[in-house]
Image (spheres, rainbow, N blue to C red):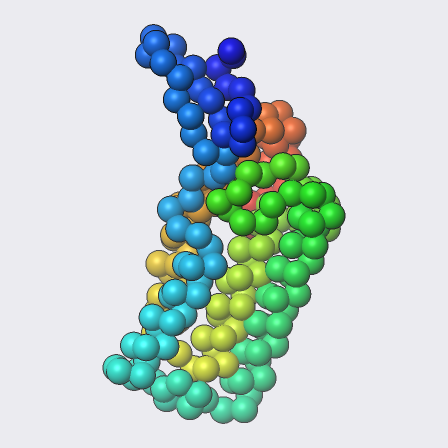
Length: 178
């Protein structure tokens, strides 16, 4: 058995000098599942907004804030839908806790390696704006840091190991964000 081989949906590594095989799940080792991160952060912000309101409070904004925020959220949803459709067409899994079966480089992935996270961030920002949640906006820098360091960088390492030169070539051509 070589250093890395597939076995029943898991990567089996033969560590030199260890005298044993170790099995790792075949998925990116992200620190949190993205839907839980985005949804949980919004729920926390909305609860804090109800308990310790900052600014006008939830839903206290103008019609313009609602219109702009919802427009941004809809744009984000469209980006996520287009990217998820490309995953479906390629026959690969969308959830980070399942194996990546194909490298998707078409559709929105031609412009960014992470259009799904861009779309989720737009949804988050749009809802925060529409609902006038100052707490959600205050959490945004921490959310971005967790997405970048706890999800994206870990996914990139997983994809580079799994797809090798095909992924590193894609990395060289397409920016991480925009």
